[in-house]
Image (tube, rainbow, N blue to C red; front, side):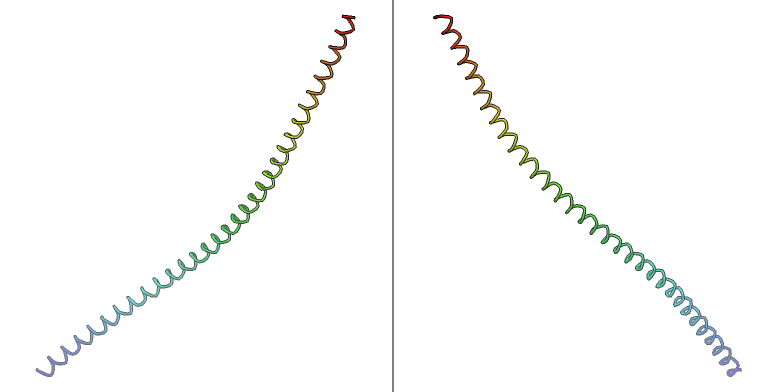
Length: 115
């Protein structure tokens, strides 16, 4: 009877060991699936980071081009403004000269009338 009881106990212990091993295998399988999912997420993140870097480089290029265009436009506006100032200065000088000539002619006519 003792041997029979010991065999039953050993059989029960063996079943518990098998059950524990099955549980461990199940957890290991879940871990493997989880690891694959994590790997897929990491790969997706790497792709996203690469895309963001590419977009950032594109934005930097566009920003550089805009800065160049703004610099060209600023230089053009400054040049145009300087030319405009010179033209205005020249125009006002010509206007002054015309006015002086007209005043001179008017004065000559007055003098002729007085004589």
